[in-house]
Length: 66
Image (cartoon, rainbow, N blue to C red; front, side):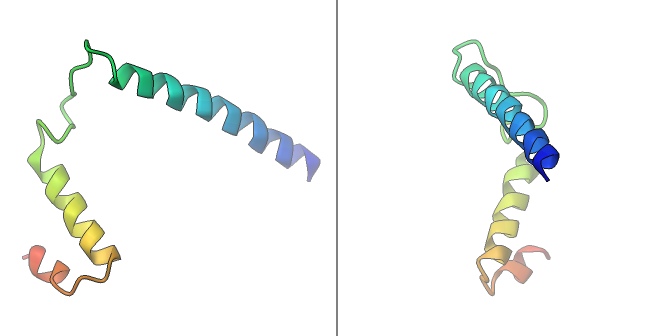
């Protein structure tokens, strides 16, 4: 079990570093959204809104799928 915990700990530390670096890049004035951003792909935002409505138990979520 100690070996599994060690691997988990190392992976988590690496992920935190990558996430922090990515966040820093997103905050840069030189950042431009890519092709899959909501700016370029409007269905990403609508799909996310439908998913969130479904997870919240909103009865109107099924209507949004039509």
